[in-house]
Image (cartoon, rainbow, N blue to C red):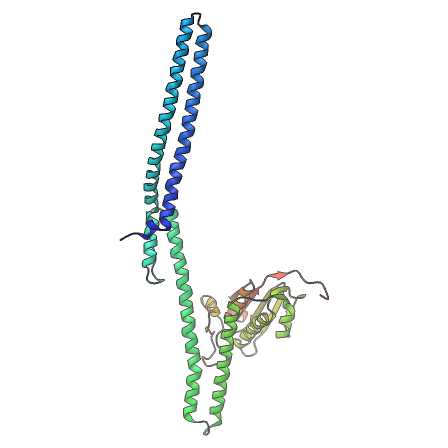
Amino acid sequence: MSRPGLLGAGSTIRTRIALVYGGVFLVLGAVLLLVVNLLVRAGTDADADAIVARADDVAVVEAYRIGDDVSRAAGEQMLMWSCMALLVIACGAVVVGWWTAGRVLRPVHEMTARARSLSGLDERLAVRGPDDELKELGDTIDALLGRLETAFDSQRRFIANASHELRTPLATQRAAIQIGLDEDCEVRQVLLDANRRSERLIDGLLLLARSERGLAEREDVRLGDVVAEEYVHACVAGDGGVVRGSRVLLAHLVRNLVANAVAYNVPGGDVDVRVEDGVLTVVNTGPVVAEGDVDGLFEPFRRGEGRDRMGPGAGLGLSIVRSIAVAHGGAVRAVARGEGEGGGLVVTVTLPVTVTPAAGS
């Protein structure tokens, strides 16, 4: 069976390497022959001139001149045969270069064949051998496959969780309908709450998808104004910084952060919202969150303690916050507060700010 790598792009690379070997050998050999012949000819001419200058006999001079002619002819013959030998050896260098290139590219062909045979993202090339550039390439490809596997697993979990979340309110509605609408007014309320929850869930999914697509249009947004509109008790320093992005999405970011801080609070708890120079900080009291569980709160459909599965939230709040922050070139970080501090979280969103527009602009 033919090897596509040797007949396609791999053959071209191998040919180039072989030609480079042969070309370099030919150039260096030609320079060497030229230098040697010039030095030999210069030395021979100098010696002959010195002998002729010291000789008194005409016959001796004539003999040396004849010998010089013979030496020149021999030099020309040597140069000619040296050039021919150089060409032959250069061809041999091309052959050796072809063989060497094949040896060097063999691991690449093996990695290509291995990559073609992979049937899933859970498999790896697992290149073995010395710690060189080829092994580094194989390890890089394995790392890329690992990241892709993680991304696809995350998407699969997202779809599975979304399906579960969408089926739950629908099952509730079906059960309520089976009981009957005319027997109890509370049934209608259950259906209404389930429908509203479905709407919030769908709106959250659409907003999450929109923010993950990136920003099609951008404008200068005073972050302090957005925060003040969404939470009147916020502490705003100056204009809070001017962010280049979407005012609508930034409003959703603040709204979700504040709603999350209020929902996961304790009765009579506090919510503190501060913004300065593109840094938005939301602090709340609430249940103590383990440090190992903080990062998981940014995953879709992850809820904190104290929230019923059929509560008003869908577990998308912090996921939407992170997605919007990343779409604006920013980042979000959460730190759990200890029991002595009142519990809860400190969530910090850092957004890149632009030069503040002139007043009245």
